[in-house]
Image 1 (tube, helix red, strand yellow):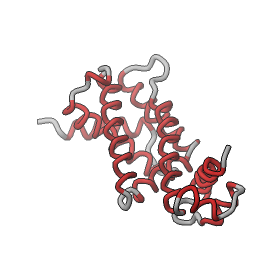
Image 2 (image 1 turned 90 degrees about the horizontal axis):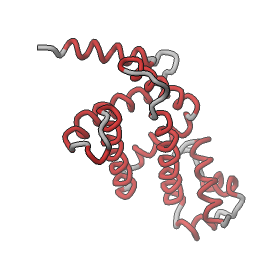
Image 3 (image 1 turned 45 degrees about the horizontal axis):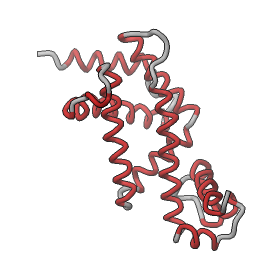
Length: 191
C-alpha cells in the first residue's frame, strides 16, 4: 500500500476513534505511519483527507447496514418487521463508531457540496431499496412516488432509531417497541 492509502486508512481509524472534529493532522500521520507533509502532497489538506475518510466510513457503514436489513429467517408480517429493527439495533451496537462517523458526515456535508451530493444520492438509492424491500417489488420497478413516500418514511424511522441507540441505548426502543408504536400511530390516523 502507498502513502495515499495508508493516510486514508489512518484517517478512517482516527474518525472511528476520535471523531471528525477531534482528529488532527498529527493523529492521522501517526496512525498512517507517514509524515505530516504527505497529507498535503496526496490530499491537499487535512479537511480533504478527512472528507475522503468520511465517504469511506459511509460506504463501510452502508455495506454493514445492508447486511442488517437483509431479511432473516422465515419471519413474516409483524415479526419480520420486529426482527428487521432488532437487526438494525444489533448492527448499531456492534458498529457504533461506523454509525457515528456516518452521522458526522451528514453535518460535514452541509459545508461540502461533493459530499452532500454523494450522501443525497445514497439516500435516494436507500429510499428506493427500502421501498422495494417493504413492498416486495424489484428495486427497478419501484415507482418514484413509492420511493418518496414508503421509502422516505422507513428511512426516517431507521435514522431516528439509530440516533436514539447512539445517544441513549438504555432507553431506546426495541424492534417490538417500534412496531407497537407504528400500530398506535396507524390507529390514530384512521378516519
